[in-house]
Length: 245
Image (cartoon, rainbow, N blue to C red; front, side, top):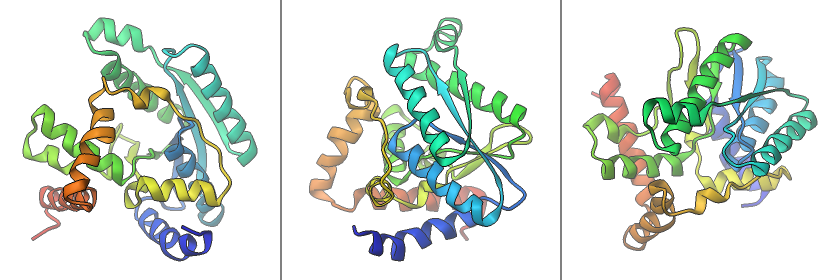
């Protein structure tokens, strides 16, 4: 996708979608891992913040599980924020402690510890919104993951567009209107680098297997499967909130 076609079709969709989530009065904290999705989100919100004048900062959570690689990720995120002139916050997550105390897998413990850090830091910084970089491909993967694990009907709504993090902070996901491919096109068009977590390719994690094996297999029978899953999730979310009659 050329920059011209992207700016004509995808960018207006991103702007209109995000206008529903962020106002001038907001203070937005972006969860920045350094991956493609979060880099895209941070750069896009920086662009919008100049126009709408909302407060913006980035938070990188170091899980302390990947040694030198984690240090390199943190360094990359700091350098990116310096380049974009965005306030950079970094916190460590006590993943091993959470895993031990709650008897959780490293994956689940990392998520729980990360959200604990999100909540604590967002309150301390004065955020009204915590923006995370989930996109439509993540949504499709989450629905299939929930199905495989066994889920109630509400699990088919997938990742919520917005939900409370604390009494004063709301999680929002401005990239749920675009695909992974469109996220990557945004980075290419804006000459932005990102880091890749090699654990994302390890099929011992079910989500990775869904992304690398199950979804491509389903797409051989139905090329629009991800689009259909995203549409279903939105319809179920609307039903549960009473928006769909």
